[in-house]
Image (cartoon, one colour):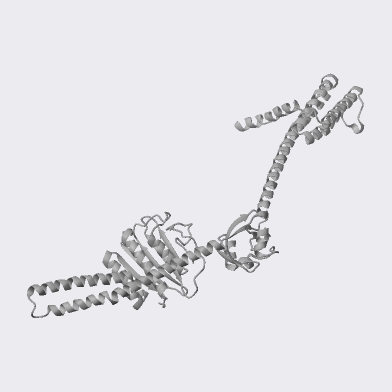
Length: 498
């Protein structure tokens, strides 16, 4: 029932609009009055034929002349829309009423009335349709105007931007450039490949919409510059993807960052060297002296001429000296393990894990994979210090039951992993720990990366990767922390490349 009511009531708004439009004709337009004059001429002709009873050739019925009204009606519709067609249809109906009432016979009245109704319906429907098309055309024209204005603004920004901009297709072929890009890379960039401009590895990353933080390129003048790229997809009517690449010259910032991390790395190295020197000084002088004194006291305590009280005092002093010696040896080991320089990284890590279990009662294991390699002192020190700091954090904060330490010797990289089953933490929060920052700086100085993943109640995983057998990388990535188990995260949680 509802559908039938809607079908019945749907024409009513059209009729009301047509009636309203008929009362507001475009009387200021000469073409409208030409249409009305043509309608009047057709009415007079039809009336004359009716009155004179003239027969039309070829047996055409007289009511067929009413169909001629469609010509001015359609003309009014095309030029004025519903306002023109509605007024013209009303004018036709008004002028034909005398003929229908006074002149036509019963048969002719039905025929002419039917034709008039059809003409009125055509005027309303076609006029309404034309009105919608005109409105749609106006909206389209307005949208095109806005689009052209936006394109003009974009073009102005594109041409005047001080940042080099490249528009490339999905194959990495340059389609369009701005003057700043031509100044940077040289003229005639169109049709050149992005791989030629920024290098194959960087170009592949850009095409994958994962541009590296830094790209080193050679300018048209032969100068080496460091760029940061941002990639944005560009709408393209064809199926081929298009990308806009905005390049920012960050050479000064990059060099400053590299100098900062070089300084931090040298500071850590100097700090480590100072610890080694202090340890050696403790071992070579105070410890040896105290050991000598303890030996002499032991010899004196065995003298037969000593009474019981003196011998007891000497033994007490010997015990105190033994405690001092032990404390100094512990201090020397904390400064730098003796085994690290003498027996290497693996032995030092075994001792570190064993001491951790003995001190905390937490079950800890060291697992080795791959063929052990000779490491430079700075790499061995960095790996040991990161493992030491990681176990210290587990002891202080994790409340763990088990810890696994893995050392993997790869062909080109060393991997150190420390994983616990403790309480974890929310890794999305800013990390302000000096221990974590020192680990990160050690990784950065050696061209590696440090990853940290954690979630509350799910433990923590630390992963250090150090390249071996190649030069350090000159670029630095941001320091990031990601929660474990995040399906959308990158593998790197804390990462710096230097």
